[in-house]
Image (cartoon, helix red, strand yellow):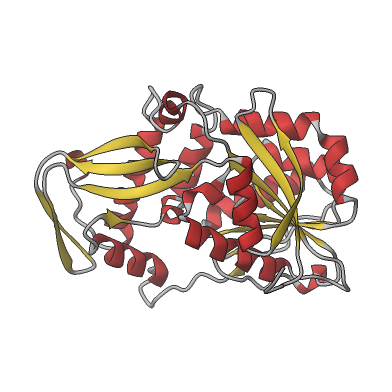
Length: 332
């Protein structure tokens, strides 16, 4: 079945501006450490740039995750079972998503993404690869609970969140997201939803920094694209040529950070509001937290998910974790 339309849940004002995007940018640039949530990196251009990043030599997570999905397909099928509706939080990769769908024989596929054009393109490609699979794309901010199509209401659900995107969020936000995923996927007739989630692992900082600051400059363009998007969509005047991309390992927080660094003192406007940056001041645009087995378990359990199985690639750089929604409890 071809992709069956789409459900647009993005809140636009009368000028077609995403209200949440504008609010996050204006609030974030007003902080002492200027910061913008990483999800706004992923407009259509940003989503395409990220797909390009997954192909560069320094960026290992996509290859590691694809290795796991290819080598352990039978184990995924046994652990997950057939007939679930796969709800992917973020448009499906042309590499990873088909590997999962081939392995588990799902009843439906529901990609969720805030980047509408990229979402529809990805849904159409998946529909062409799996002509008998119902595909229901939903344009939505999956950071909040999403109403799923009535057509899959009675199907057991499997959430799919690959790529270690969960690492982009500080722990509080990550727990909130995992809880909203649990609410989106909710149990059906006593069958608890499951979640297959990618989490990158702590490793040599040199390997980590190279993955976020590649020699070809693709990741830098991904970072600059956020400033270009602000200028385009929010009437911004950020001087892009005065910004420098920087990736740094923060050992205390166990994360790689991406920043846009001002190379000179600058002033600019966004949606009629004025901002200034001193030379060396930064806009913090992304975190990529790295996990150990214990920290991954703690994060999932804090959000109501019980880890059931775990897989790692041959180099032990990356993990895929299968978790099941657990019953709420307030005591041991």
